Each structure stands twice: as C-alpha cells, then as structure tokens.
Length: 112
Length: 107
Image (cartoon, rainbow over all chains, first blue to last red; front, top):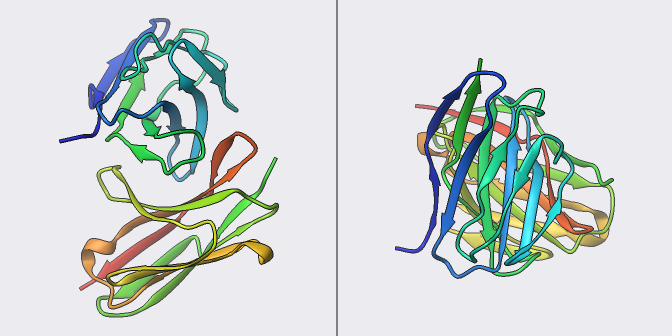
C-alpha cells in the first residue's frame, strides 16, 4: 500500500539532545513537508522540499534542520536550539507544490 | 500573512444531527483543503476544493472563492465523526491551516 510512514510514534528525549524524526513515502511524490502541531492549535510549517537536494524554510524553521537526499525520504532533526520542542510532528507529501497534501500518522516528541 | 478563521471552535451534536462548519480566509487563495483529525491524531483528507461544491457520502463542501469562505456540511452525524476539522488554504508558497473546529458527537 502506498503511504507515508513516520517513525517512531512516540519519542522521549532529554533537553540538550538533538533528535531525528523519520519520514518515508512510497507515493512517488515530489514535494514533502514537515508541520508542527501544538495542543489546540492548527498546523504550522517547519520546512518543505519540492525536489531532491532542495528545501525551503517555513514559518517556524528556527531550531530545526532537514535533508532531502532521496525522493522518498525527508528526515527532520530537532536541535537543542529549539526552545520548545515538545509537540506533535506531522510529515506530509504531495505530487507537486499546491497539490493535495497527504499526511503520515505523526510523531509525538516529548523533551524533558 | 493570510488569516484563516474557523467557526465554531467547538461543537457538540447528538448523533443523527446535521452541522455546518465554516472557514473564512482573508485573501485570495489558490486552493483549499478540508481535513478530519481523529482522536489519535491522524489527518484524513476530506476535500480538495478550490471552488464549487463536492460531495462524498454524508459530507459535502462548498467553496466560494470570490467571497473568501468555505463550508463543510456533515449530515446524519455519527460518533465516528468526532475529532477536529481543519481547513487549509494554499497561499503564497504554502498551505496555511486554521485552528480547527472540535466536533463531539454523542450517542
């Protein structure tokens, strides 16, 4: 089945540690996205990539980094510079920018 | 940036009732998408509807792009409809999300 796989589902880290969230898609989509969701809030864009080896900052990119070495993979690293990293992180993909978004099941990150 | 406002913020319905959720946006947009987020956090595509009306079973959506709003209709609601409904608008170079309508359907 085609889809977007995010792992792990739950992640716990100590403050000061970097952590990498995985996102893999087998939909053959060109565009991939990372969103952050805080309780009671909508989704905010962290980074997006329209093509391999290229990515752009979203509205809340500070303290995060990404890479896009393969079409199917778009990992997100939450660095120690991110002041409030505890959140629900959602990865999405689309055929191209502006096409319908399809989401993975998310990773809940807790940093203490 | 663009403002995306959803109303009502919270809604409680008896099973079998109908409801209308609204999404207003402050500027012209390229596209609009409706999602349902279930209690486990999974976001499910409902409609991709830049303009006009679409129907899918008990759900339908209408976007009036010239007046900058979209409506999501849920008829004969079921407990499985509970969750948060988001609209997202394609503006500039990204999709912007509203803060959602939290729907609870009670048996």
